Amino acid sequence: MTPAQTGTRRFRRSALLGAVVATALGGGAILAACGTDGGTGGQDAADGPARLSVADSYIPLPPAGGMAAGYLTVRNDGGQDQLLKVTSPAAGSVTMHRSTASTMEQVEALDVPAHGALQLARGGNHLMIMGWQKAPALGDELELDLTFAKAGTISVKVPVKELTYRPGQS
Ligand SMILES: [Cu+2]
Image (cartoon, rainbow, N blue to C red):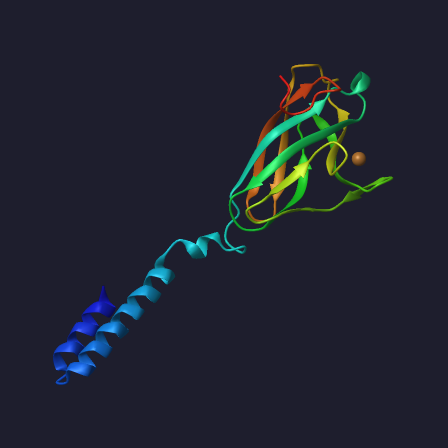
């Protein structure tokens, strides 16, 4: 590496033994700093690119083609991102909702934390899906297109499950 070669050149130019030792130590310190800068550490920073994957998605079967909820987990192995929009070719309207203790409200975006997950789950944040092209049936797989601020659009096929289904159940 270049810093080591620079250190060696200084070493040869030096006439005093004490200066030789100091130069060798200095070269080591430069090498250590270089290794930190050149490593992968920077890519793991909170402002690096988001690395998203979607898991545990499901839609509990809505009554007679009515309004349905949508649940899923967005895992993130990279930097912070935001879910901005959800659409579906199978439905006229998909909105994002945040639940509070007693009510729920529509939100414009949901944060996907760096090296964490955005969870849409019963009792918490969720999707509300309306205006079905065709009433969903058990076993259907419905496409949801999730648009993120940084990662772009991710399309997932979401299974329709029994009303009482919870992830981890078969
Ligand atoms: Cu809701």
